[in-house]
Length: 379
Image (tube, rainbow, N blue to C red; front, side, top):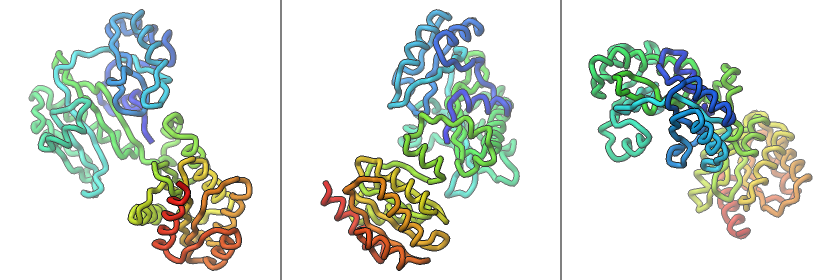
């Protein structure tokens, strides 16, 4: 789950990270009032959960409240990469002398959190990582001790931070890591961390990505979710307790277990097909949940075939089969379906689906090959 810039920076501020003075506005009049309160040049920043806001015209500088109102009205009427702009952040404009990238990520290879910094900060940090990786500095963090002061100071020196700012940088790096841990984030970044013309450090922009699996511990953060970021199918899946991600292929996938779902997509690709989604119905899914999952898959017009790959452990094969048949009763579709069910009550499940004129398979390889062939016939 992604947080907006204004939400992320507000969290950073709780942990001692300096941020510009500013407030969020939902309409042009509010933007004018905020600009008048700040009584200086301001930046009007669209709040949408995509990159490239500046290039799309979603970030502009206003010299006075009247101009702030005018620009906010323009930005609030925009869509950026298909997402409507519903709020703008009105921040005081700062004079940036240098831009630094500073972030904390979960490093799965190193099995720890890693702080990343680069003196070549700014909006093109991805390009820096791709073309000049030597400009990226990484500090591995032991979760038992957290980010230690000597590590933060070493990072400051590696980034060429002015010695008069090393203490401030250390405090900011420590605060960023504390925010990362406290929110159960998978990413927390300041881009850019600005060195101002007055030789001060300030977080000019911020981003936090939360671990969805930890949100049960953070009901306050769950309330910050922006539903515009999700498709209607993803919203419905989340409300039904399903893990669903829409993809660009034409073979719908319904699987119980995230690892099995990934393997299913890999095998589909191996045999020349393309998965239309990732969908994990989870363990112990009953007929009503399976029905909802099937409806979500079939709502995608690109789906030319559906492959069911069910391992009957906690989830009974016959229960899944009944859910599929029940789901099909209310859906008019010509989309062919292939089912591979093994484990608990698998034979009964396959019998139920065969009686419903559905193709069945003994192995995942067989199921994937049948699904790929069926999807090609429907093109």
